[in-house]
Length: 142
Image 1 (cartoon, rainbow, N blue to C red):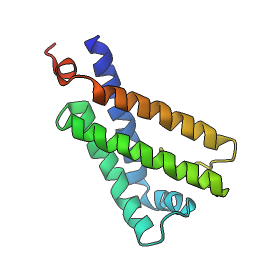
Image 2 (cartoon, rainbow, N blue to C red; image 1 turned 180 degrees about the vertical axis):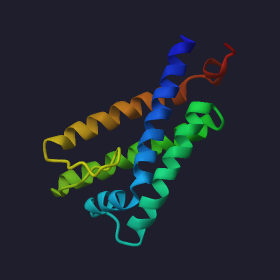
Image 3 (cartoon, rainbow, N blue to C red; image 1 turned 135 degrees about the horizontal axis):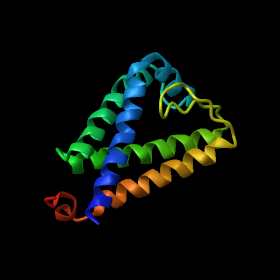
Image 4 (tube, one colour; image 1 turned 90 degrees about the vertical axis):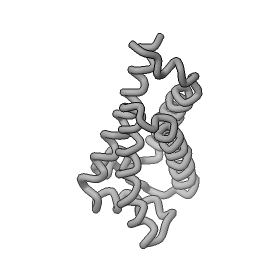
């Protein structure tokens, strides 16, 4: 069963490492994505757009390497809760957003809000499951 924990750590951490890197490589595109939610005024939207990708990268690396894994998992799970809230608010207000989840400024239509929410709930369930596993199970020697 230890192999499942390791695969999930690599998947979960790697997903956020990829997402953060994609955003960090195109900061202006990600800033436009953040602004599309119309939840934060500038300069707060700009600060979030500059800070969040690096937080995802560092937390993803923590989950993958095991150095600060619990902290990385807490940060990423909390981020998913914030992402879920932002998507739900935008959907309820009828705001046309650009997700920005994996860079590139993908448009979200009314039909894709539910897909985004289901995806984030699935990721949150995975992240919480990893977080709630006893520490000795996730760090046992090979």
